[in-house]
Amino acid sequence: MKNLVQIEGNLGQDPVHTQLSSGKHVTRLSIAVNKTWTKGKEKKQTTDWFRVECWDKLAQPASRLKKADAVFVQGELRSSEYVKDGVTIPAVSIVAGHLRKIDFSIFSKADTPEPTANGSDAPEQQAAEEPAPIAPY
Image (cartoon, rainbow, N blue to C red; front, side):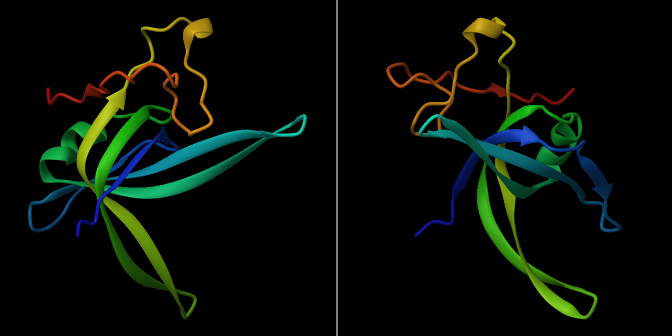
């Protein structure tokens, strides 16, 4: 069995890059995944937030992202816990194995794909384009 998760969403804030005392680099991202649907005549939306950690080779390119950038992340779920005000709180994060910046700039505003019933931004009858890779400088 594999522990594998994929998300597409937007950064909710600028990345936080840290170099640890061991010399390893980590960049932490907060990614919002929006889902929109219609119930009757009312349009509804919900947002799920994901914590993502990008280690070593992914840390530097991830640190160049900016708030609101669209990204594709593939990685594995990690569970942990922390103590806040004496209460132990469980936490789940994604440790990224692959990270891509999604570039919709090739579309005019009118051509930007609308989310479909399956939650994808790609039109149902056409395959989605490969997200643009984040290349190191």
